[in-house]
Amino acid sequence: MALYAIGDLHLGLSVDKPMDVFGPGWANHVERLQEAFSKLHDGDVTVLCGDTSWGNDLGESLADFRLIDSFPGRKLLLKGNHDYWWTTAAKMRRFFAENGLTTLDILHNNCHAYGDWALCGTRGWFFEEDQKPHNAKVFNREVIRLEASLKLAEGRPILAFLHYPPLYQGYRCGEILRKLEAYRVERCFYGHLHGPSHRRALEGAFGGVDYSLVSADYLQFVPKKICD
Image (cartoon, rainbow, N blue to C red; front, side):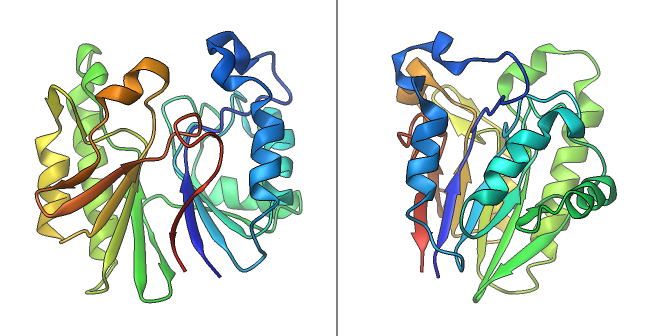
């Protein structure tokens, strides 16, 4: 049994969203994901850090979910900024059950256990969102969701998962960083950054938390092993 993380699968089996338009690094990315996941085992758990499917609703994303469900192990899904299919946790879980998607679950306003670890997370916030109107309400909600998830750890060591990077060259999301540090999160995994922006990612220890970028193209479409 092992724990993995990867973000930004950007699957679009039912929509016209070919990812190779973003450069040769995305060529055959679905086949590369299939090959990488084929090496996992049924007892493994993979956290998918947002931007999983380009579908505009659950039905349009069903083919993508079926592909992910076919991969070995359990998958925990976070919300990304392009996950337009996202709805309430109850509706998503009901949709998964009705369609026989038995290995998918949601990491949102909750916490999952993996051995002695607490797996916590939310979408997070990014500097580009500051340019949009009415951001304060959404931003505050993300901070509240993160803290709600962290509280559910109830003293267990914490691994945190976000879609947006909470820190970046030239940017710090202070409110989120302070929550991660206050709850003594040991490691934090995030996605969202692609292509040239990879070089502006910050990885390693900052404020007592160890950060890792897990965007799929950054990982060459191979899930990052976190622990056994």
